[in-house]
Amino acid sequence: MLSTIAHECPAFLLNQAKTLPRVVTAVVNPVNTLSLSSARQACDEGLIEPILVGDVGQIQQLAEQLDWDLHGLRIVPAADEAHSAALSCALAGKGEAGALMKGHLHTDTLLRAVLKRDAGLRTASRLSHVFHMTLPGSDKALCITDAVINVQPSIIDKVHIARNAIQLMHALGYDSPRMAILSGTEEVSSSMPSSQDAAELAKLAAIGAISGARVEGPLGFDNAISSEAARIKGISGQVSGNADILLVPNLESGNFLFKQMVYFMSATAAGLVLGAAVPIILTSRADPLEARLASCALSSIFVEYCAQGPERAVAV
Image (cartoon, rainbow, N blue to C red; front, side, top):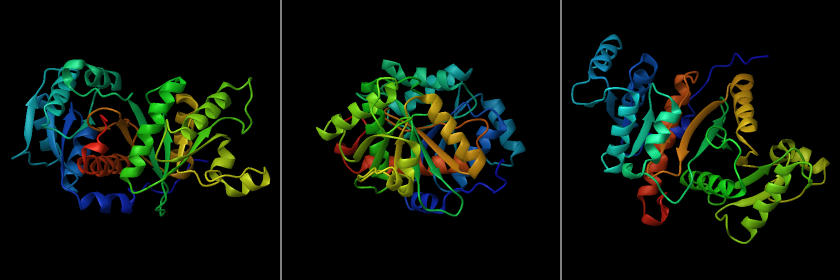
């Protein structure tokens, strides 16, 4: 059942990012072949200007194996992954880097460094992750949030998660994206807490607590993405059948959903952590190069969007 169709870095995303200035990106602990080759590919494509933060000897040795001439690139020595994370966050906090890119280290180590007050990266927003999903040959995107960071988010957490995802969609040119708050049912039920959360979030959106998008819920997955399923079930609205963003009930459901798309449909999952002063390109060891490159393109577009004016900045 696994798809054998090759993954693609979506051309529309890459082409848009290539028209923008390179983003100075602190690459955190790129001390294995996968992380360093990903940084090189993004550099070669004109997406990032990397600052390599890690063990200098290891980085140089790997670069030789990859036939990558590091002349002219900034390399910041770090003793281990925690030190690399701290130094990278310091660079971003001082404005010397406009984005962070995860290399060979644990996600928790990186995020702990981001959240330290003296790093200067914390904002009023909660950190959350957004997957920008595309299928081979398609220029339509579907965002899934949060499938990586917030395990069992509260209502307030979900408000932050929604706002972060909406801001990313605005950066991509969606003036009023359609957000579906998912549950296992489209009816509010006390036996399914996610349906109650979804209804509460829809109410909050209606009074302006979540703005810049059309928000509906609870919606089942089928009637969020299939207009035919919504028609059969008699569900109307601006979002049903046409969702741009799926806000999932918890991390497990989002994790299952995005992986099903990747492995059954060859979807490319570009991922960013938002809510800090700079975007964080967060990739997995299992991610193909196409997903890593798409994540860098997504970061470039988001950074340019935030640079257009203070009212767009993440910290607001």
